[in-house]
Length: 383
Image (cartoon, rainbow, N blue to C red; front, top):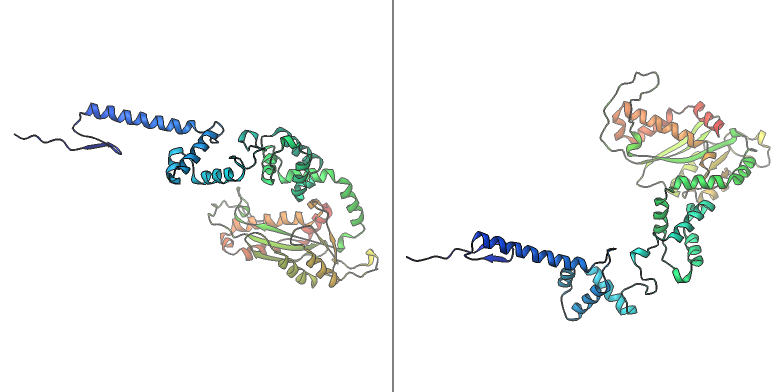
Protein backbone atom coordinates (compact mmCIF):
# COMPACT_ATOMS: atom_id res chain seq x y z
CA UNK A 1 0.00 0.00 0.00
CA UNK A 2 1.63 3.18 -1.19
CA UNK A 3 1.50 6.48 0.64
CA UNK A 4 0.92 9.75 -1.14
CA UNK A 5 2.10 13.03 0.30
CA UNK A 6 -0.46 15.79 0.61
CA UNK A 7 -0.14 18.68 -1.87
CA UNK A 8 1.24 22.04 -0.86
CA UNK A 9 -1.43 24.33 0.55
CA UNK A 10 -0.87 28.05 0.06
CA UNK A 11 -1.90 30.03 3.13
CA UNK A 12 0.14 33.21 2.78
CA UNK A 13 1.59 34.71 -0.39
CA UNK A 14 5.12 33.34 -0.81
CA UNK A 15 4.76 30.75 2.04
CA UNK A 16 3.75 27.11 1.48
CA UNK A 17 3.16 24.41 4.10
CA UNK A 18 3.69 20.82 2.98
CA UNK A 19 2.13 17.96 4.89
CA UNK A 20 1.57 19.95 8.09
CA UNK A 21 -1.41 20.00 10.41
CA UNK A 22 -3.89 22.84 10.71
CA UNK A 23 -2.36 23.95 14.01
CA UNK A 24 1.13 24.11 12.47
CA UNK A 25 -0.14 26.13 9.57
CA UNK A 26 -1.88 28.57 11.93
CA UNK A 27 1.31 29.03 13.99
CA UNK A 28 3.37 29.65 10.87
CA UNK A 29 0.85 32.20 9.58
CA UNK A 30 0.98 34.07 12.89
CA UNK A 31 4.78 34.13 12.72
CA UNK A 32 4.72 35.59 9.22
CA UNK A 33 2.20 38.22 10.32
CA UNK A 34 4.31 39.23 13.30
CA UNK A 35 7.37 39.48 11.05
CA UNK A 36 5.49 41.79 8.69
CA UNK A 37 4.44 43.91 11.66
CA UNK A 38 8.07 44.22 12.74
CA UNK A 39 9.08 45.29 9.23
CA UNK A 40 6.30 47.88 9.18
CA UNK A 41 7.40 49.17 12.55
CA UNK A 42 10.96 49.51 11.27
CA UNK A 43 9.74 51.53 8.32
CA UNK A 44 7.62 53.74 10.56
CA UNK A 45 10.53 54.28 12.90
CA UNK A 46 12.48 55.82 10.02
CA UNK A 47 9.92 58.64 9.83
CA UNK A 48 9.99 61.45 12.35
CA UNK A 49 6.94 62.50 14.27
CA UNK A 50 6.26 65.48 12.00
CA UNK A 51 6.12 63.27 8.88
CA UNK A 52 9.69 63.92 7.62
CA UNK A 53 12.30 61.21 7.10
CA UNK A 54 15.22 61.19 9.49
CA UNK A 55 18.68 62.10 8.27
CA UNK A 56 19.90 58.57 9.05
CA UNK A 57 17.17 57.19 6.80
CA UNK A 58 18.16 59.53 3.99
CA UNK A 59 21.81 58.54 4.35
CA UNK A 60 20.76 54.89 4.18
CA UNK A 61 18.93 55.63 0.92
CA UNK A 62 22.05 57.21 -0.59
CA UNK A 63 24.18 54.25 0.52
CA UNK A 64 21.80 51.79 -1.13
CA UNK A 65 21.78 53.79 -4.34
CA UNK A 66 25.60 53.98 -4.36
CA UNK A 67 25.77 50.21 -3.94
CA UNK A 68 23.80 49.82 -7.15
CA UNK A 69 20.32 49.02 -5.88
CA UNK A 70 17.43 49.86 -8.14
CA UNK A 71 15.57 53.06 -7.17
CA UNK A 72 12.19 51.33 -7.13
CA UNK A 73 13.54 48.57 -4.85
CA UNK A 74 15.01 51.14 -2.48
CA UNK A 75 11.70 52.99 -2.41
CA UNK A 76 9.91 49.78 -1.43
CA UNK A 77 12.47 49.01 1.28
CA UNK A 78 12.44 52.47 2.88
CA UNK A 79 8.80 53.31 2.22
CA UNK A 80 9.31 56.59 0.35
CA UNK A 81 8.83 57.76 -3.22
CA UNK A 82 11.48 57.93 -5.91
CA UNK A 83 10.75 61.66 -6.25
CA UNK A 84 11.96 62.19 -2.68
CA UNK A 85 15.09 60.18 -3.37
CA UNK A 86 15.94 62.17 -6.48
CA UNK A 87 15.49 65.36 -4.49
CA UNK A 88 17.86 64.13 -1.76
CA UNK A 89 20.50 63.13 -4.30
CA UNK A 90 20.38 66.49 -6.07
CA UNK A 91 20.58 68.48 -2.84
CA UNK A 92 23.44 66.37 -1.52
CA UNK A 93 25.36 66.98 -4.74
CA UNK A 94 24.59 70.70 -4.65
CA UNK A 95 25.36 71.72 -1.06
CA UNK A 96 26.35 68.53 0.78
CA UNK A 97 23.11 68.35 2.81
CA UNK A 98 19.54 67.18 2.35
CA UNK A 99 18.08 70.67 2.76
CA UNK A 100 17.28 73.13 0.03
CA UNK A 101 18.76 75.80 2.30
CA UNK A 102 21.17 74.42 4.92
CA UNK A 103 20.75 77.49 7.12
CA UNK A 104 16.96 77.30 7.25
CA UNK A 105 16.68 73.50 7.57
CA UNK A 106 13.10 73.57 6.31
CA UNK A 107 11.51 71.55 9.09
CA UNK A 108 7.74 71.29 9.32
CA UNK A 109 7.79 72.52 12.91
CA UNK A 110 9.52 75.71 11.76
CA UNK A 111 7.26 76.41 8.79
CA UNK A 112 6.20 79.96 8.08
CA UNK A 113 2.53 79.18 8.70
CA UNK A 114 3.22 78.26 12.32
CA UNK A 115 5.55 81.18 12.94
CA UNK A 116 4.06 83.47 15.58
CA UNK A 117 6.02 86.56 14.51
CA UNK A 118 4.98 86.19 10.86
CA UNK A 119 1.33 85.74 11.83
CA UNK A 120 1.46 88.84 14.02
CA UNK A 121 3.10 90.82 11.22
CA UNK A 122 0.46 89.80 8.65
CA UNK A 123 -2.47 90.52 10.95
CA UNK A 124 -0.97 93.88 11.88
CA UNK A 125 -0.49 94.79 8.23
CA UNK A 126 -3.98 93.74 7.19
CA UNK A 127 -5.46 95.93 9.92
CA UNK A 128 -3.21 98.92 9.20
CA UNK A 129 -2.97 98.70 5.40
CA UNK A 130 -5.59 96.38 3.85
CA UNK A 131 -4.93 97.83 0.39
CA UNK A 132 -1.66 95.86 0.25
CA UNK A 133 -3.62 92.61 0.39
CA UNK A 134 -6.24 93.71 -2.10
CA UNK A 135 -3.92 94.90 -4.87
CA UNK A 136 -0.77 92.77 -4.77
CA UNK A 137 1.27 90.68 -2.36
CA UNK A 138 4.60 91.55 -3.95
CA UNK A 139 5.33 94.65 -1.88
CA UNK A 140 4.14 92.89 1.24
CA UNK A 141 6.45 89.92 0.76
CA UNK A 142 9.41 92.17 -0.01
CA UNK A 143 8.74 94.15 3.17
CA UNK A 144 8.53 90.98 5.21
CA UNK A 145 11.80 89.70 3.76
CA UNK A 146 13.59 92.98 4.55
CA UNK A 147 12.20 93.45 8.05
CA UNK A 148 12.61 89.84 9.15
CA UNK A 149 15.72 89.04 11.27
CA UNK A 150 18.42 87.38 9.22
CA UNK A 151 19.10 84.78 11.88
CA UNK A 152 15.46 83.66 11.98
CA UNK A 153 14.40 84.10 8.37
CA UNK A 154 11.84 81.77 6.79
CA UNK A 155 10.60 81.45 3.24
CA UNK A 156 7.31 83.31 2.74
CA UNK A 157 5.06 82.90 -0.29
CA UNK A 158 1.73 84.37 -1.27
CA UNK A 159 0.00 81.04 -0.57
CA UNK A 160 1.38 81.13 2.98
CA UNK A 161 -0.06 84.60 3.49
CA UNK A 162 -3.43 83.44 2.15
CA UNK A 163 -3.46 80.43 4.49
CA UNK A 164 -2.73 82.62 7.50
CA UNK A 165 -5.48 85.04 6.52
CA UNK A 166 -8.00 82.24 6.03
CA UNK A 167 -7.03 80.67 9.34
CA UNK A 168 -7.94 83.95 11.08
CA UNK A 169 -11.17 84.46 9.06
CA UNK A 170 -9.89 87.33 6.91
CA UNK A 171 -11.85 86.91 3.68
CA UNK A 172 -11.60 89.28 0.74
CA UNK A 173 -14.94 90.88 1.65
CA UNK A 174 -13.74 91.55 5.18
CA UNK A 175 -10.50 93.11 3.90
CA UNK A 176 -12.50 95.28 1.50
CA UNK A 177 -14.61 96.52 4.40
CA UNK A 178 -11.46 97.31 6.35
CA UNK A 179 -10.11 99.23 3.36
CA UNK A 180 -13.35 101.18 3.02
CA UNK A 181 -13.28 102.07 6.72
CA UNK A 182 -9.68 103.26 6.43
CA UNK A 183 -10.48 105.31 3.32
CA UNK A 184 -13.38 107.45 4.47
CA UNK A 185 -11.47 110.62 3.62
CA UNK A 186 -10.92 109.41 0.04
CA UNK A 187 -14.60 108.49 -0.25
CA UNK A 188 -15.67 111.93 0.94
CA UNK A 189 -13.27 113.67 -1.45
CA UNK A 190 -14.60 111.68 -4.40
CA UNK A 191 -18.21 112.19 -3.31
CA UNK A 192 -17.74 115.96 -3.06
CA UNK A 193 -16.25 116.12 -6.55
CA UNK A 194 -18.79 113.71 -8.00
CA UNK A 195 -21.79 115.51 -6.48
CA UNK A 196 -21.13 118.37 -8.86
CA UNK A 197 -22.41 116.10 -11.64
CA UNK A 198 -26.22 115.86 -11.67
CA UNK A 199 -27.44 112.27 -11.23
CA UNK A 200 -29.48 112.54 -14.44
CA UNK A 201 -26.21 112.91 -16.39
CA UNK A 202 -24.64 109.73 -15.00
CA UNK A 203 -24.64 106.40 -16.81
CA UNK A 204 -23.66 103.65 -14.37
CA UNK A 205 -21.85 100.73 -16.05
CA UNK A 206 -20.74 97.37 -14.63
CA UNK A 207 -20.92 93.63 -15.27
CA UNK A 208 -22.36 90.70 -13.31
CA UNK A 209 -22.22 86.91 -13.55
CA UNK A 210 -24.92 84.29 -13.18
CA UNK A 211 -24.42 80.54 -13.20
CA UNK A 212 -25.43 77.30 -11.54
CA UNK A 213 -26.97 77.67 -8.10
CA UNK A 214 -27.38 81.44 -8.51
CA UNK A 215 -30.53 80.77 -10.51
CA UNK A 216 -32.14 78.41 -8.00
CA UNK A 217 -34.44 79.39 -5.15
CA UNK A 218 -34.78 77.49 -1.90
CA UNK A 219 -38.32 78.61 -1.16
CA UNK A 220 -41.51 79.14 -3.12
CA UNK A 221 -41.46 82.28 -5.21
CA UNK A 222 -43.60 83.62 -8.01
CA UNK A 223 -44.10 86.72 -10.10
CA UNK A 224 -46.12 89.67 -8.87
CA UNK A 225 -49.89 89.16 -9.00
CA UNK A 226 -49.40 85.46 -9.79
CA UNK A 227 -50.40 82.77 -7.32
CA UNK A 228 -47.44 80.95 -5.80
CA UNK A 229 -47.10 77.29 -6.82
CA UNK A 230 -44.36 75.11 -5.33
CA UNK A 231 -42.25 73.40 -8.01
CA UNK A 232 -39.50 70.81 -7.65
CA UNK A 233 -36.00 72.04 -8.21
CA UNK A 234 -34.64 71.36 -11.68
CA UNK A 235 -31.47 69.29 -11.58
CA UNK A 236 -30.01 70.70 -14.79
CA UNK A 237 -26.96 72.95 -14.73
CA UNK A 238 -27.05 76.50 -16.01
CA UNK A 239 -24.35 77.85 -18.35
CA UNK A 240 -22.25 80.64 -16.89
CA UNK A 241 -23.18 84.00 -18.38
CA UNK A 242 -21.77 87.49 -17.98
CA UNK A 243 -24.04 90.47 -18.42
CA UNK A 244 -22.65 93.97 -18.95
CA UNK A 245 -25.21 96.72 -18.42
CA UNK A 246 -25.56 100.51 -18.47
CA UNK A 247 -28.36 102.25 -16.55
CA UNK A 248 -29.44 105.86 -16.23
CA UNK A 249 -31.66 107.72 -13.79
CA UNK A 250 -34.01 109.03 -16.48
CA UNK A 251 -33.86 106.24 -19.06
CA UNK A 252 -33.58 103.08 -16.97
CA UNK A 253 -31.61 100.40 -18.81
CA UNK A 254 -29.78 102.00 -21.72
CA UNK A 255 -27.96 98.96 -23.03
CA UNK A 256 -27.00 95.44 -21.98
CA UNK A 257 -25.09 92.60 -23.55
CA UNK A 258 -24.90 89.00 -22.34
CA UNK A 259 -22.30 86.44 -23.37
CA UNK A 260 -21.70 82.85 -22.31
CA UNK A 261 -18.22 82.75 -20.82
CA UNK A 262 -15.92 80.33 -19.01
CA UNK A 263 -14.36 82.85 -16.63
CA UNK A 264 -15.24 86.48 -17.41
CA UNK A 265 -15.54 89.02 -20.20
CA UNK A 266 -12.47 90.53 -21.79
CA UNK A 267 -11.30 94.00 -22.76
CA UNK A 268 -12.55 93.37 -26.30
CA UNK A 269 -16.06 92.82 -24.92
CA UNK A 270 -15.71 96.08 -23.00
CA UNK A 271 -14.83 98.06 -26.15
CA UNK A 272 -17.66 96.41 -28.09
CA UNK A 273 -20.03 97.38 -25.30
CA UNK A 274 -18.81 101.00 -25.44
CA UNK A 275 -19.38 101.12 -29.20
CA UNK A 276 -22.99 100.03 -28.72
CA UNK A 277 -23.52 102.29 -25.71
CA UNK A 278 -22.27 105.33 -27.58
CA UNK A 279 -25.34 105.38 -29.83
CA UNK A 280 -27.64 105.29 -26.78
CA UNK A 281 -25.95 108.11 -24.85
CA UNK A 282 -26.10 111.86 -25.28
CA UNK A 283 -22.97 113.82 -26.08
CA UNK A 284 -21.18 115.74 -23.34
CA UNK A 285 -20.50 119.36 -24.33
CA UNK A 286 -17.18 120.64 -22.94
CA UNK A 287 -17.37 124.00 -21.17
CA UNK A 288 -21.14 123.91 -20.72
CA UNK A 289 -22.41 124.12 -17.10
CA UNK A 290 -23.66 120.90 -15.61
CA UNK A 291 -27.22 122.16 -15.25
CA UNK A 292 -27.28 122.64 -19.03
CA UNK A 293 -25.67 119.31 -19.96
CA UNK A 294 -27.99 116.66 -21.49
CA UNK A 295 -29.10 113.55 -19.63
CA UNK A 296 -27.01 110.35 -19.75
CA UNK A 297 -23.76 111.90 -20.94
CA UNK A 298 -21.18 110.69 -18.34
CA UNK A 299 -19.97 107.08 -18.01
CA UNK A 300 -19.34 105.92 -14.43
CA UNK A 301 -17.31 102.69 -14.19
CA UNK A 302 -15.03 100.90 -11.75
CA UNK A 303 -11.49 99.53 -11.80
CA UNK A 304 -12.18 96.07 -13.23
CA UNK A 305 -9.36 94.47 -15.18
CA UNK A 306 -11.24 94.67 -18.49
CA UNK A 307 -11.56 98.46 -18.18
CA UNK A 308 -8.16 99.03 -19.71
CA UNK A 309 -6.47 102.04 -21.26
CA UNK A 310 -7.71 101.13 -24.73
CA UNK A 311 -11.28 101.60 -23.54
CA UNK A 312 -10.41 104.96 -22.01
CA UNK A 313 -8.78 106.04 -25.26
CA UNK A 314 -11.89 105.00 -27.20
CA UNK A 315 -14.15 107.06 -24.94
CA UNK A 316 -11.78 110.02 -25.13
CA UNK A 317 -11.61 109.86 -28.92
CA UNK A 318 -15.39 109.61 -29.32
CA UNK A 319 -16.40 112.37 -26.92
CA UNK A 320 -17.70 110.07 -24.16
CA UNK A 321 -17.05 111.85 -20.86
CA UNK A 322 -16.11 109.24 -18.23
CA UNK A 323 -15.41 109.06 -14.50
CA UNK A 324 -13.60 106.15 -12.86
CA UNK A 325 -14.52 105.12 -9.33
CA UNK A 326 -11.82 104.82 -6.64
CA UNK A 327 -10.63 101.24 -6.00
CA UNK A 328 -12.92 98.97 -3.96
CA UNK A 329 -15.86 101.35 -3.60
CA UNK A 330 -18.81 99.36 -5.02
CA UNK A 331 -21.16 101.17 -2.61
CA UNK A 332 -20.80 104.28 -4.80
CA UNK A 333 -22.02 102.45 -7.91
CA UNK A 334 -25.83 102.69 -8.42
CA UNK A 335 -25.93 99.69 -10.74
CA UNK A 336 -24.95 97.29 -7.94
CA UNK A 337 -28.47 97.47 -6.53
CA UNK A 338 -29.90 97.07 -10.03
CA UNK A 339 -28.00 93.81 -10.40
CA UNK A 340 -29.58 92.60 -7.18
CA UNK A 341 -33.03 93.16 -8.68
CA UNK A 342 -31.88 91.55 -11.93
CA UNK A 343 -30.89 88.31 -10.18
CA UNK A 344 -34.22 88.25 -8.36
CA UNK A 345 -35.97 88.38 -11.73
CA UNK A 346 -33.80 85.58 -13.15
CA UNK A 347 -34.59 83.31 -10.18
CA UNK A 348 -38.29 84.01 -10.53
CA UNK A 349 -38.27 83.27 -14.26
CA UNK A 350 -36.36 80.01 -13.85
CA UNK A 351 -38.61 78.99 -10.97
CA UNK A 352 -41.77 79.52 -13.03
CA UNK A 353 -40.50 78.15 -16.35
CA UNK A 354 -37.64 75.62 -16.37
CA UNK A 355 -37.21 75.97 -20.13
CA UNK A 356 -35.14 79.08 -19.48
CA UNK A 357 -32.33 76.82 -18.23
CA UNK A 358 -31.62 75.78 -21.80
CA UNK A 359 -31.77 79.35 -23.11
CA UNK A 360 -29.59 81.56 -20.87
CA UNK A 361 -29.47 84.42 -23.39
CA UNK A 362 -33.25 84.62 -23.58
CA UNK A 363 -33.42 84.32 -19.80
CA UNK A 364 -31.19 87.36 -19.24
CA UNK A 365 -33.01 89.35 -21.92
CA UNK A 366 -36.34 88.65 -20.21
CA UNK A 367 -34.94 89.55 -16.80
CA UNK A 368 -33.49 92.83 -18.12
CA UNK A 369 -36.81 93.74 -19.70
CA UNK A 370 -38.47 93.40 -16.29
CA UNK A 371 -36.29 96.18 -14.80
CA UNK A 372 -38.33 99.36 -14.62
CA UNK A 373 -37.11 102.94 -14.70
CA UNK A 374 -38.48 103.40 -11.19
CA UNK A 375 -36.32 100.54 -9.88
CA UNK A 376 -33.21 102.05 -11.43
CA UNK A 377 -34.08 105.54 -10.16
CA UNK A 378 -34.50 104.14 -6.66
CA UNK A 379 -30.95 102.78 -6.72
CA UNK A 380 -29.61 106.15 -7.83
CA UNK A 381 -31.46 107.80 -4.95
CA UNK A 382 -30.06 105.26 -2.50
CA UNK A 383 -26.46 105.90 -3.56
